[in-house]
Length: 304
Image 1: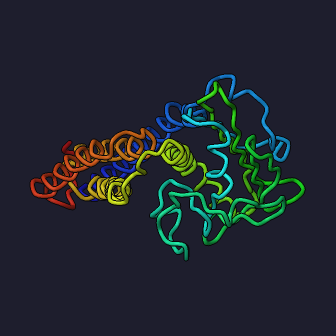
Image 2: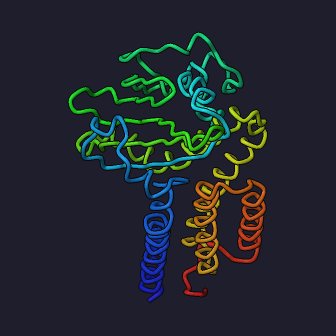
């Protein structure tokens, strides 16, 4: 009988963990992903055709993001054209995007003349292990990067400039990607893009805006704290799953797992102050510590 109860308890907890994963996936797919695919963009910008669309005619992933910058296209263009790994960086999460670059961990905070004149076909490193290529280049108007596959291209990224008045410009980014369903190694990179692109591109747009407008970029220490909160939230979520299977108060562990999962989504995609996420993560950690102290492990009962 004891073994039968233990098996039933295990099945219940497996079902609870599956439900937790399904709930968080639903929150991402239904509530987060649609807004991230059009972060900052107007309906007109989302539907407007841009140069480079023809490179990936039927994308699996298509995202249009935009931001208003106080400056003319001529002010913004030099910052766009010099972007890239081992070039000026991406002005975003330097601790991730520039790791291993011989130019240092920080993205440029000035115009670099040596990177102002790329030509179509030039290789554009985007990380230590991946690269794209320059495609169409129209100074002060648009810049198109393309994937390394030629026919058809497997991905494209356009940066387009649309002046709204004499002193302001809309910078629009569009990413179009065709997933590699038959190659698991490339598909893993595609899935990384699926979740990571929503984090990276808005920060890049904000980084360009700061530099053009003469604002101080995000301090490296604040960036480190933000990344640490992501990792801590992920660790807390994993720990909660373990607690679900090992604690008799597994229902509370499930709730802590839900809180940690929602916090991870919030920290990645809300683009709010990092201190808010750090404070919430601290409370979740305290809850897990309290649960581990009060709840015996390896229990066979059904106590919530």
